[in-house]
Image 1 (cartoon, rainbow, N blue to C red):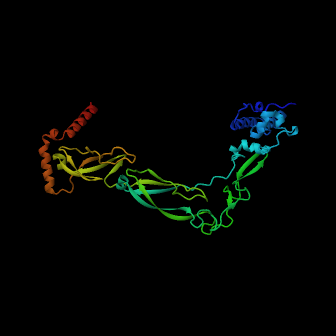
Image 2 (image 1 turned 45 degrees about the horizontal axis):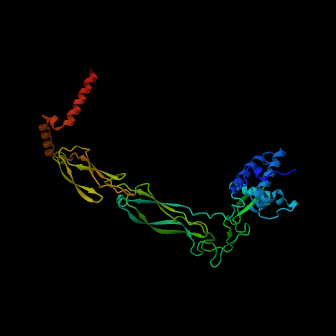
Image 3 (image 1 turned 135 degrees about the horizontal axis):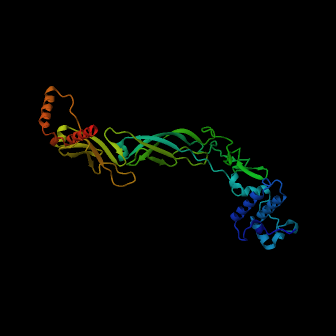
Length: 378
């Protein structure tokens, strides 16, 4: 019985590349695999046919011979190609196609990537002044660092790690499981590809030691609670030959005794006397840059907001500076003596005859209350 054309078997064109061949074979292998079709002789034959076609076309030398001489060019019984360039067993070809599922196939093998060091986080508490203006802070981090004695190799000084005898330096070993060839991390070297026969006494062969290191951190102006500063490579050291993790400095700004921050603006409450509220005046207002003069107009009521432009915070990523908003609170006098209380009563009686003129809000409120009760009783 004559064999079908290999390109026809895989349903690919004659100029199909390696990825197209692999995709076609994977589709057929999943469809006709004996495990999925245990009682089908036809499926088993189609599976073998697809495997044979892929083994030939995926090997450049075999494919060249097949394109030139057909099946005779690759059939050993007809004096065809005898090279060793292609996959020569079912396990090899299956491991190649399904390598992305089982951890890397024949072409995707090699040493496992070294484990990167862990990232660390440091919580840094700042005053509002330092957060607004920026500052350099010295912090101490307990972490793992590369061992100075062995320079991070884990081997005793004067020696070096040797190639793992189990995986021959590949970091992985292949195990046969039925029709599948499964690639796993080498149990001897744990994927490193090398083993330490004579470990360093300072780090017990780990390549890193526990240590407290001091770092200088530049805090940019304008940071706020929740901002995070990344220091690349300042986290924990990784395994031998691996890169270190990163350090993340988490910022928390402490509450201020005067100001409350809201984005790029600052807020504060400022008490003023009864007389200043009535007659007006000029007050000194604190800002993060020093004192400024604020003019209070006469007849100022509690809760009035004054805006001092450009006295807030400059955004960390640039832009216009925020404002300082001052809310005035008219302070009621306390601990009055008899004479002072009498003076206030006399003053209140003096204003009583023209309350609407001097207390418009109070008069309007009481009129509203009167109308409300009238509606309730009618």
